[in-house]
Image (tube, rainbow, N blue to C red; front, side, top):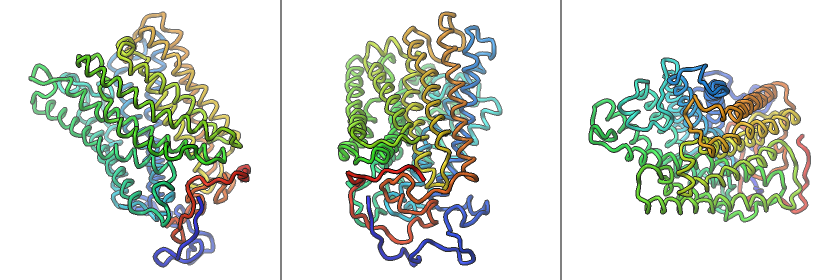
Length: 556
């Protein structure tokens, strides 16, 4: 995408912003070093960085819980933890990873940082609301971790009733309140992105010139705004039943536990797309940039995001095939679940076509993108197994479901997140990272991931149920393989954390566009100035306008 520059924005000068007392270029990082300037900032880039630091801490906490229960599962006898402790560990792993890492990771970090830059805006539409979202997120996250420290919760991240509303003796309500508060953060972030895309696009940037990253965030934001309130209401009803004894879900009190499942999955299945739709957007950017090609079927990919967002609200019932719902309802949900594979497949096919005949640059972001395509495809295809009534009955609540879920969420969303972090790291920090270490890390993540989760497909098919810490001895070898893979994966995740941190001080300085990519964000300085652009950009070309004879160079 190319752009020409309009007159200065609101009185800003014509060149890079200069601090009056210094000759160095002022950017969003060095404009003010005080802690107060960060905690009270309304700059979307700084808020994105605060989310980045926060979710990294939560990722480490959730990952530590996973390490502990994977160690426990290396032996079939459950010798390390009591069942109650084991239940608390996998519950906290699920709660922290889903609500405090996966859902906010790409929208809150990269969406915050890059949506305004990609559309030529100075900031989000509601900067103060953006900061309030981060504070709500932190209040919820700290509350969740606090509950873990004082005793934890053992209901599973799904909070199924009536166990959660009546019988559990752990800190159910404190954890539910944490999720409830964080939900408002998600709603406000989604609302901000929607309004920003509608109102703050640069001149010439019509809807069909928008980068697919922006399209995917727009679609995910619709789910955040429309779906998250349902989760809030569901948690509120659990609180009413647990606190006041009013029968809503508990049959003994006249309630219906299946109602909880309807409400919970009406949000939680679309929530999968809050996590994966922004990942799709990242992958579109990576594949276009490192193949030097325009995205094949741009409009199909854009509309596929909206189709996934809409269909995502219609498939919750496939989580409930064994709940006693009618066979006809099961058939309808099964067909709808199969239908959602169509727009997902459109994206994968179009990315493949974009790569075709492209002059590929196998830098780290592209390695993550290729890994994403392989792992997401396996996750998507096994999702079709779960959409089929008969197969789902066989593998319901087994490790097959765990493996499928992680191939989508970790193999998909986390791979895209890491790919996006490496792609935009030079823009965010002004520094390059050590490429060879990054490539090694990407390969190690791929190997560790598959060794962790592929054996779980077999375990589930053979009948090992999820959430059990004692199991028959014949399942031990596959569990040991899975735990060994988790160890490799855990080490692999430490590499980016280490070398990216190192690069902040010792990394080579990045140019404004080290990948020779298109997009307005690459026309800003690295790191960007506090107001992004010295002048309002005027967009004159479509997205991904790579010339046929694109000059493809190595990062510099």
